[in-house]
Amino acid sequence: MAEIFDPEPVEGLLSYKFKNPELLKQALTHPSVLDESRKTRRGGNDLLATVGDAVIDLAVAAHLYGNSGPTGPFLTSAKGDLTSKRSEFVNDNRLAEFYEKTQLTQHLRTSAGQKQVGLTPRMLAQAYEAIVGAIFLDADYEMAKQIVRRTMFPPDISRDPASVRKEPDSVHPE
Image (cartoon, rainbow, N blue to C red; front, side):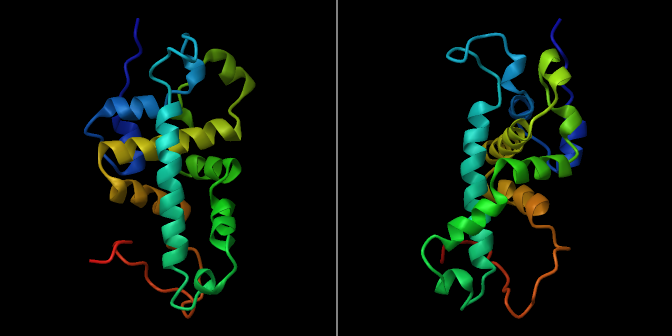
């Protein structure tokens, strides 16, 4: 008997309603659930995680760069400083923290064996990437960027107002 998936509780936690709830189901399905070999299986979150990884990299880099100010650290620093700073946010341990912050851990679908062993930071990071990828494919970059900002850069993070400027609405000038 197939498991019935109710997207509403997860959509409530994400503050986003999916047009295609199958994307959300796929994002929450760890490959350990699937019986097929890696070459033929469908429905796991691997591919969505790949898409989400790219979106997260872009959203974090744009946020850091946009908030560095007109003479900020990334405009006057050595090559690679933005990449280094971005990697402080985009790594398995940090992405796992951000996934847990969304309170979605209980919704991640894994095999019974994996549940006994426990969830690893890599699994949680992959699920976070997959959620972002699913939102990107279901809506657009702006919507995916919102979930990244809300979970990775909450407004309560204290900042020095003199060194931070408001990020532009678009990274592309008109």
